[in-house]
Image (tube, rainbow, N blue to C red):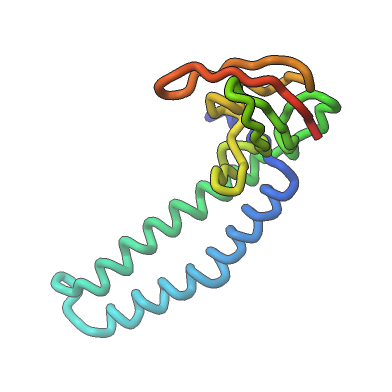
Length: 154
């Protein structure tokens, strides 16, 4: 018997994963099944590249579906952490060079660095977790340790 570990998500992240799962099941799964059917109707399966590619695609898709189902089955929506940094919070920090950056802390399943979303398990995210405005944090990032002062948590 395996123990399922809770997966903490933002409410938005949970909704996005649910929508992705529904899309994979209702759109992608039938598309791949149709490709397999078309390729199988072409005859000898042992030398049918389209059939083998479609079966590989099906395997990857089923793996994605199983992973999303596991995450959602074990999902917990992040609780509000008040004025402390936590999953779902937006944090503005000032680095040692005086530059301000704003991050939204999310679970590792919701990361989008170009959108300013960093994981609570990333070096910077982990260093900020539980801190309040005015507090300092140090993150051991690849290449160097970075220091931050938390300007705002919302």
